[in-house]
Image 1 (cartoon, each protein chain N blue to C red):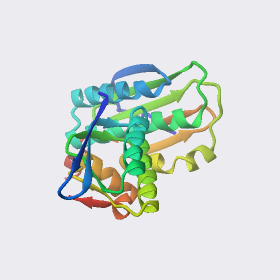
Image 2: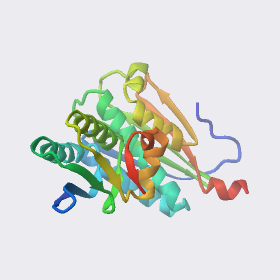
Image 3: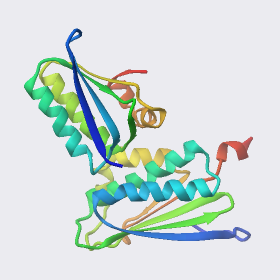
Image 4: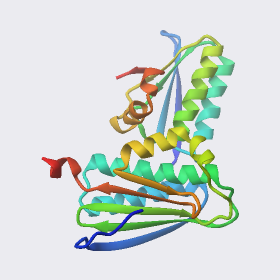
Length: 105
Length: 138
């Protein structure tokens, strides 16, 4: 399975909602990173990553999210993760990254 | 070292050989899912097995240079467990430094596998996952 990325600007609340569809792994994570970095660099709005259609993520995907978090902090914008599936939240729990990211459950 | 104790009968052995390329890691996940489903693992353990195998492949891809050789995965299926061995056949070397540089992968693998071992010299990782461990321990 590959990765599709749905990007939507929520005008009234002034944030970008990014919905990855499929898997973020060692093969697809560069594509995901580039897509989100482009939004961070070209805009000032906060970012929400909606995990409702994300089936799988590996440590490479976690690493990408950490680098995106660093980038958003530099630009003083917020990044939030929501609707993560249990198998993906489990990785955040194991690695302690659930205490680093703002995760809406 | 992983020993087969007296009385433990291996049911089946399956070998998967993939090019050491990131696009084929999803093939490992699909194969692992199918093998573990056929042999009685519950859904949570199937997800764990997919993650463990995937992270081992990520570890080898990031740690040892690619020179056209493959990654070999051997699934040994027992009544109560799955023992899996992953070997990187590329010529590069593997050391403790590689493990230290892959902290996220290692943390995930060590958390999800019931037994886990790295043979640096032979570029081999072995792990065991017991079938429905929670049910059997009740």
